[in-house]
Each structure stands twice: as structure tokens, then as C-alpha cells.
Length: 430
Image 1 (cartoon, rainbow, N blue to C red):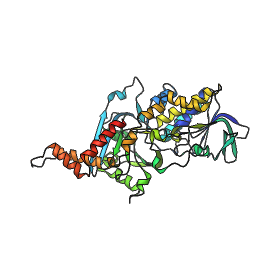
Image 2: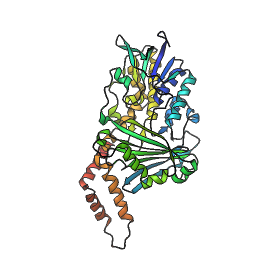
Image 3: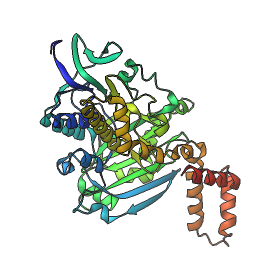
Image 4: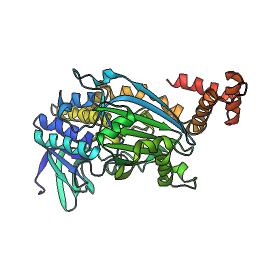
């Protein structure tokens, strides 16, 4: 590639945001170059992972039907762990599995999904190059006009950063600094291979049904939680921890995660499986409040994780769908700007019109709830203690449920007033 090459857009990163942006631009006849640092799209990406299909439908109607997806999520689960005990809430809605419309969400494996989506962008006419690291941005007259990779200079009307959390490109553009430790979690994940039949038996699933399970009480009191997703013939099991808090613990992230795997209620689900993938990654944790204050400058836009587009409500985690939507929004802004309008403000307008920013703002209050430190150990302990008390029959005269609960609240180092204040805080946050 020589210095005379110029594209309508250069996209750094072939994850869902970058590929969705490239797909939309190429579909409209724009010349697009995607530069991916990994050997293949998805080879270095980590996510739970789960995709809400509305995002693919926004990209192109019916696109989900041929996508590299795993199982339709029909079981929403929340599990609270305490010692060897566990409570699992399983919400099953068969309508999530209806075939006359796109199922609400699927589990995904990023290596397969990202490669598939990037290939769709290529089919539309985008150019994809992998194994290339972008070293610098090219700036002329205070505008970003291209990138430098090794000895190659590549030019474009606009450069779009889709290079993930702690975006190197956003830093180079002067739109963000080094990411703060409290703004991200450290996520670890294993993909554990198991026969489809075994997965369906253990999770009470039909042939292509899937479960998405959020875990609380699995982080040794550290701000964070776990997740478990059923794939076609594997299980994705992971946990996210706040790095600063891990530093004060005697155990490493890996050791805590291995204890999670051996928990009786988890081990029985993965027993006999073979770990085929182990990965770790930074995860944006601040939601709407963590969105980059500057999402653009002249000749430059930020999308996906690089912009902080991730939602964690405690009962669900969303990232891939928001990444795709942001990529589409960026592409639409670039297309509209071809008529003379400014790209940056158009991008913000698209993020609002496509309901991405309003959605993130609507659930912003969950950040206040998740900042309460004792919900990660004392709450799971208390709830398990209450259920333990309810179901224990030992021949003794039971005390009233009210007295039992009050006693257990005190034994867990909490007070009724703390729980009332937490409830008030929760209502206000919602």
C-alpha cells in the first residue's frame, strides 16, 4: 500500500463496532479499509458473550439468520453463592424462542462471530487487513487525515477508532488519557467444551435453547461478579473483578476464578468438560458516566468499547449490541457528512436518534447500586442464610420468620437501617 492510497474511511479494529461501521459504509459505496491488529478478527477479543439481535436487524434485516450464533437465550438466571451454598433464580419465557420473529438474544463466541461479521463487511466491498498494528495518526491542519502502520502511511477522509477499551487511537487523537483503574474491571473467562446433549440435560434446555446466568458472591467480596453462558457445545464461564481491590487480597484473580469453577453448584455444570480457551481482558465498568467526553474531533470518531458503550445492570451485561449500533451511527454520520455537514455533531445526533445514549442514560442509576460494597458478599450470605433457615427442619420449635431474619441480618454484620437505606437508594436510582 503506497502513500497515494486514500480511502473514504479507515477503521482501526475489526470487532463488532468496526465491522458494522465498515459494512454500512461499504454498502453505500464508500471505500473502506479495516485494520485489525490480531491475526484474524476476534482472535484477541474477549466477551461473555451475548448478542441482542435487534442490533443485527438494524445493520441489515434478516442478517442474524446466517450469523455465527450459538444458542437462543430462553432462560435468564441469577445465582447467588455463599460458601458451598447457592440460590438460582431461573426465569424461563418460551416466547423468546418463537421462530416467526428474531429471537431476542443469542450466546456467541467472539472468534467465530467477529470473523463472520468482518467477512460480511468484505462482501459489501470493505478491505480488511489483519496482523497490522497502527502506530500513529497523521494530522494536518488540526485534522486527522490518516494512520501510520510501520513504514506505511494510509490516508482517509475520516479515521474511526474501534480498537476497544483503553483505546490507543483515542489517546493518540488527544481525546482520552490513560484509563483509571476504577473505571475498568479485569475480566477472566474460560470456554469449556461439553457435548450439546450434556449441556441441554444439565440446564434443562431444548435443542437450541440457551441460558444466560449472572453470578453474585463469587468474587471474595471484591466489586464484581460472574457470568455463565451456554453455547452450542461449550460453556463460557467468567468473572470480572475491580483491579484495585484485587491488589488488597492475598489471592490472585486466577485463584479466585478457579475456586468459582470448583463451587459445587458450578462444578456440576462443567464436570467432564475440557477447557479449550482461557482469556483475560479489561471491561468498561462505569456505564453512561464513563462515556468519553469527547467522542470526536475533525477527521476522527470513536465507537464501541473505545467510547465506553457498555451497560452492566447486575442482572445483564450488554456490549456487542451497543458496539454494532455505534458503528452504524458513525457510518450514517460519515455518509451524511458527504453532503457538507460536520461529522462529529452528526455522530452524536445519530447516537441519540438510534437510542444508544438514551438507553445508557436510562439505566445509569444502577451504577449507584453496584457501588455498594457489601452487596458482593454480605447480601449473598444473608439470602442464603434466610433460605437455609426456611428449609431447615430439626425437630426444634422454629422461631418466627421475622425474628429469624432479624437475627440473620445482625449475624451478617448488617442492620435493618442499612437495608432500608439501600432500598431507598435503589428506588431512587431506578
